Image (cartoon, rainbow, N blue to C red; front, top):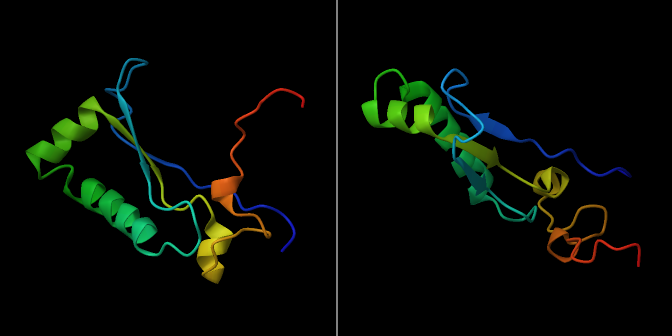
Length: 102
């Protein structure tokens, strides 16, 4: 595999009640591919929220007043291969902190 993975982002919330001012909550399941529990936990959270939206008043209020932004695995290739790196790069060392051309 010679190309980076695509990062899946799930937005969970009620699009009919959403505005530009609606608070967004960000949840990251894992940055490294060898972190196994976080991605599964976030997918289970999404399933729980969507499955109980109509029957649980707390979940209904949550999803009508917030947008949950879920990134189960920032390194899906590493997750699939149970490796920390993606294409030989540790994502934890690959943040752009210097955005100038240097």
